Image (cartoon, rainbow, N blue to C red; front, side, top):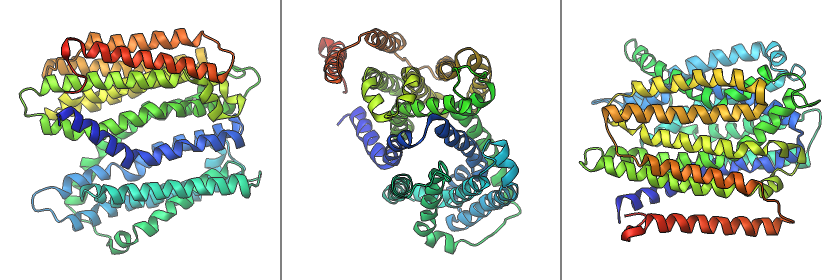
Length: 480
């Protein structure tokens, strides 16, 4: 079996084991968009945008520190676990107490002043996340992916069940979107039972030399994580700040944010594909780095990645009628034009992960930090200018441009330090042709869903067949 076939198989396994919980979580959109108006959904989105940033602060990059210090020669993994867990809780616990003590003013500043309990629930949820972050890291270090996946899958199944119970069976409008927060809090509480053995056997400990060294090591990781999260989540916050009043007629900013967030969730389809590939590709790159033919191999990997993502991009983008059925509520449909833009954005993020192999195998990882921080700054600047001009569509184009420029910058630097013969013209041709097809097909209106589905299926078959014929000319096989 070829190396590329092995990589494809590992990508599938990682996808099933690590991505399945996110896939299940994605389908909550079917329930939420039928229960909540876009304005209500916007409230959930705004709160969770802050949670995404604070989760990074709560764990402070200590998962990476745990891996680093546990694998040092002569290290005692049990003692390192106790040290790292102590650091995480010494950061997250005081922050949690502070947020709970000031829940009312924080709630008011986040536009949920009538519900300070929302802040309390979110804080407890983040504290639980932080408390089990290192136990989860230990499972990864000990190569126990099944237990890792089982915990994540059970958690999301509990969350889905509770969402259904609260929103369809025991719904109280006075609580409203709070049920979503409460379901996640209870779901995270399940982790306390799952990791009861680890948590009960943990003993608080501080080492005057190692603990500060861990913090020093983890601090840049935390900053890089915040920069990366800025690229991912900053637009959720800035629509509330920079969208002009009445930009969407009489619709509120919360309404616009809700539409944006619901349609943004479709980009998770490409994001999950990228993440599944990344889980498999990173060890693949390292294990083949010493091979003299590795540059050509890495170029082929990226080429096949681009082809696969173009098929996914086209398949999702031309089936807007199906996306409408999933959303249900017609108020959300106005934002579906951003889906192809965001899918392309994540395609380029995947390319960035591919071309970033050069600084990982040459130990020049500081370039990754510089590019990520640069992307975060560019995200803020572009959103500042684009949102007043084009609303959430402008924010979507900002994401696309940021990930495109990050990929280009990483490629150009990589060609200087570790040249890889990427098929730049061919790869960009596939992306450009896919984008043109999406644009042209969007102009075709058919009488009903079945005709539309049949037409789009035919287009997909021709597209895939064309790729196959192009890639197999002169007797070459797609994967060899």
